[in-house]
Image 1 (spheres, one colour):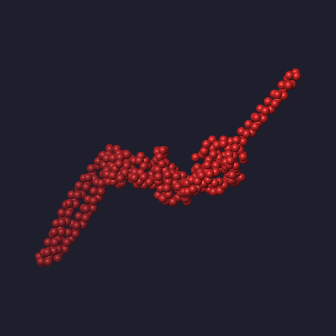
Image 2 (image 1 turned 120 degrees about the vertical axis):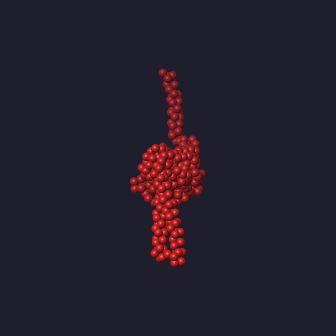
Image 3 (image 1 turned 45 degrees about the vertical axis):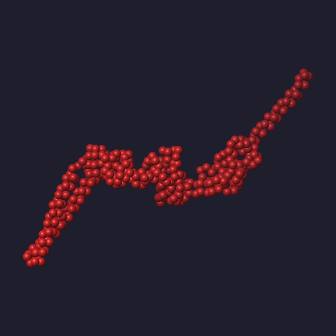
Length: 359
């Protein structure tokens, strides 16, 4: 019993030391945070409007047949390039060609008649001046010549009409481009006005985007834009605002804006989906911090500044920003460091040990 009484104080002292060390460790660890620290610096602040849309073409043409008939030959198919005036398809109807030949023969016959009447009129005028024929005979010759000329004009108009009908036997391209639709086959019977082909001028590609009505006042023609096409996820393309349609859709609350590409994009097609960032403001040497480092409290904006390795809550005045950064107008200076991601457990004076630097 005596031996136990001598041993217990020793154990009590040891347990007390262990308990004190444990408390000290927990307290120390509780006052230390491991965080990402971002060095405050001046950079270029680019503000842009985000918009979505699709690739469109300024020059397109829908081709419709003007005559009803049966398709005889297909001369161009979908995906092929055609030049202005080139035939896409031809009808096999023979009646327009026959009518054109008949009109040509009638015109030639009447022209010969009119020429003869002119020669006869000239001769009669000479005879009248010589007193060989009467005034009545000269008047009759002039009347017959005018009648022949009038009939010749009619024949000429008929021939022109028949030739126009003959042209309608072929559907031709009004512009140069690529066929994106060719909806006819040899042997098909098509009534007049049927859509048989669509042509897109690939050199006229533009980007058609919708912009929120709140952003429209910031837009100006000529503003630069960066475009991303879903079909080319690893590439970015330069463009500029070319047209702003002055009308806001009452349902979507957006306005249509067209962007011109700076250079042709190989492989691009009409209808491809795209996004655009239209730059409306650029500020040099702006003091920027990540948006994630700024938090709101009591109607103010704050950051956790790192001073001598410890946290210090600092009120700041925030200005313009982009999708990632915000400009600090007051409260910080270049070279300061802030916590990249504030946490509720942060307290004034906590030791801040960084695990990396924000970029």
